[in-house]
Length: 568
Image (cartoon, rainbow, N blue to C red; front, side):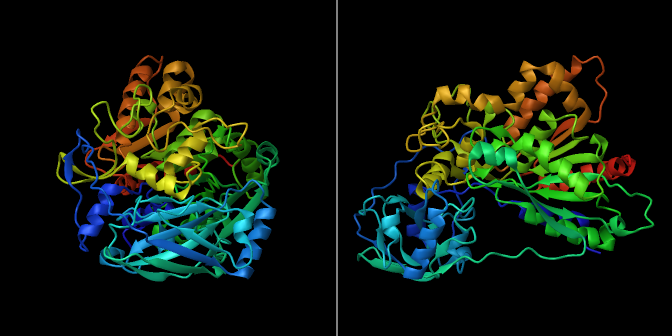
């Protein structure tokens, strides 16, 4: 019998890949200096790394020449003609072919473990003429890249070109044209032109078939109308064995809605179906119908929040998709039979849904949610700070860490480095990566361009106070509680279980701690303070290690809740 916590840890860590990836001048200097992997410089938890002026890069004319084969170019033109509002880009992704990165497909970029170079240029129809050849490099017009020069790179890298046609979130979407993986060799004493040939498209991956697994889609009239493009709800539905037993005591089943974290989608239902089929898991895993929702849009993880750029996702879920699911399958159409859970970005989404629709869901189980108090948006106070990249003393703001000792961390990445990566992928802030996702979720929509209004300057980090105060504050959960405690505090008391490690890898504990204090204060003012809800910070737990801890805490309660759910 496999150890259940280990099995479930692997499940949750694969639901959505970690979201922060570092790219910056300091890293590339280190990358050039040694072929060996070296640990980041440790810093204290309270003091992020000071800004260090990078050593000037030597001039270089290294560049990439990308040829697009005629049949691939013709298909790309066809796709773009049917998708006129797409903003296609040509990317060149690199990955050093040594150490723990050896053999990695550059298509998997951006990388968390050891960030790698990225170059991009916007595509136009004229660039997709038959036999087109495009140049990317530091001296080529239109190229955006990290690092800003290639002269510090040394040794063998794997390279891949991708035509990101805007088919979905990220460049690895099925249907995007790509080149094969090509080996390139950088040397400081010579200039090179590296050739890449785009001659194939990424294939669609058929979802697996299982006896207790259904894949469902439903057109969304409301989202299609608001966004002006076809939008469909998608989900993977995993059933417990007894669902198919004609002699089972229960005919209508409670539901646990799962919202994947950043980078994940409804296909995670495959693993829930496998666990539900496993006899050894039946006494551990709550026996309910598990429905994994798809939070993906081409602008990023939409978070199931109603907004200007993703449309009314929350409303469409509860008014269109959930009623349809309950008619399609034998599901309990009652809040006592509906529960919602998620981790990381999915943790924020589950919390938001429970607060927006307390009459729809009977309980929320949220782990390590994205920032729940914008005064602690990671290491930034969006209510007061002027710059996203640096504090008032010009210290770089950290955004990703790994514990080193009880009171010291490896600061693996700064916000400036992460946003430099996103800018290299898409200078218009539409990469679909983490900061671009938050901007699309929380910002208003620019009427002229149709794009999310940028709340930050991607090159300087300057915060646009007007955008934050006008748009972003609508999604500040702690501010919502303070503004309307009579409505929000009872939901925390009765329905919300929130857990986070106090060494969260992305500093999400800072916001959870502030929210916990606010909830404690407002809950004490209620006429009745008794309720099953709680907010808990677990000592020494990180963004990943909190997952099995949360499951051990939640699953006994969820087993009881689903067992007590009514038939109708």
